[in-house]
Image (cartoon, rainbow, N blue to C red; front, side, top):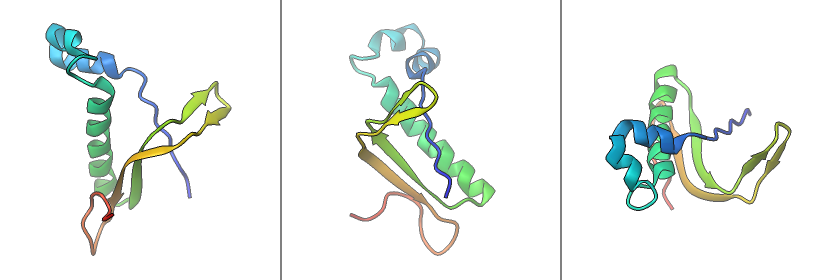
Length: 96
């Protein structure tokens, strides 16, 4: 099975663009730019997967870092998991 890793490298800039000057000042104080972008990205991925008929598990994890183009450091901590199913069940976080 293929596994994709997506590292968002401009979360702060995205939040600044969406929220303007005030948002730029609030980043790190009130607004967690990475968490906001991650939440929207997960939702958009789930919607796109459903639209294309793709069943998947989307994990939000803390820890892994790309080191250059050929190495991945993985001290993994799963923050969120979302299952995308096409039929017979609901999408969303799995039951604990």
